[in-house]
Amino acid sequence: MNIQLQVLGSALRAVAEEMGAVLIRSAFSSNIKERRDCSTALFDARGRMIAQAEHIPVHLGAMPEAVAAVAAFEPAPGEIYVVNDPFTGGTHLPDITLVSRTEAGFAVSRAHHADVGGMEPASLPAASRELYQEGIVIPPVRLDEHVLRLLVANMRNPEERRGDLRAQVAAQLLAERRVAELCAQHGRERVEAAMDELYAYSERLVRAGIARLPDGRYEAADVLEPHDPSQRLELRVVVTVSGDELELDFAGTSPQHDGNLNCPLAVTRSACFYVVRCLTEPDLPASGGAYAPVSVRAPEGSLVNARPPAAVVAGNTETSSRITDVLFSAFAGALEVPAQGQGTMNNVTFGSGRFTYYETIGGGQGACPDADGPSAVHVAMSNALNTPVEALELAYPLRVERYSLRPGSGGAGRHRGGDGVVRELRVLEACRLSVLSERRLHAPAGARGGEPGERGRSLLNGEELPSKVTRALEPGDLVRIETPGGGGFGAP
Image: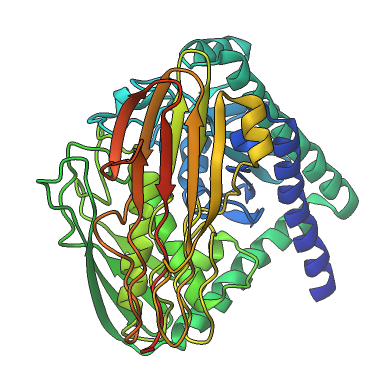
């Protein structure tokens, strides 16, 4: 039985990975085909995640809500549903999710589309105050040619959007075939039994990992950097370890605000699950069972459990990153954890009526108790790649003037934090720029006496910009992003 379980578990994970490969290879936009800003997973018939590709943490941890939202419509085999509504199973509007039935459950793909309409090209406006300004809102609806035509008509560069959505459809169809083949080869009942055991196995291992933590109550707080600097936005969490269970309570966190750093509850849960997995069984093949021992409490109407029609576009990227920071800080009372990493995804978009381009930029990871932090990596809730210079310059009216490490930006310590990067892009035609970032005012903290990492900087033609900003650009303008370094660990 153990051998059969390993064979079927590996086969299910392989299906999820192959879904991702099909999506990436078929996509039109550089954001998916080059940066791989997408995720795929398989769920059982009860809507529990069973297998996932090793893609984007903030996508994957929030997927169960999307499956639950679609399952309520009782989709038939062969039907594909689409959703991006952050308050009905989505994360933020650019992340479009497809859900379809398989012979043993559901297949899911989620991809960040380079534009979904809204007030600014690339759909990451710095100054949005309500959800409708950020793009088209898609509740769970069956995807057919009529719906597809309606959706892309509300997005910039509709043919590129159509191509990316068709790539997601291809991934869904692949999953249906592969799961049917598994059921034909091993029997549907055996595949479903394996799904049950994989879920239970993950839960057992994570419970054992939690049980190794000292029981107790651990607290931490941090602040965000809103578009309106007069606002104070605070994240607060209390972690309670009790036997083999965890409670993460965000009582005291600031109310939702009139900017876009708000998080739907699905994104907050996703960040919590990521941290728990890191600190208990990081090498465990992930399934929803790993999250069963974790309860998340977040006050309704708060920054981490916003209500519609709150703007959320930066909540998915920036607030989720900072939730991981505050959780690691709380767990530092129970065990040694790394120093803080860059704490931001450094979202940068360029766009016009002719093109839209989106990227996130890596930075420094915090140092660990036994090693320096890596440099120039995506930290925490992001797991995307950079866009290769050649691909970027071939497809867009942009030129990369510089792409290098930012030496010395990592915090000093017994183990040094990783360095950030410097990325300079010159625009070759008029367009709009949006930057959504964090850690421009508050540096990533060191741990156990380590020094903080350097704060990030965003500049336009040498003028320093705030952490959230939208500007009109003219040909020849130069945008420079200096990403934060990670904190150091231990006194130097």
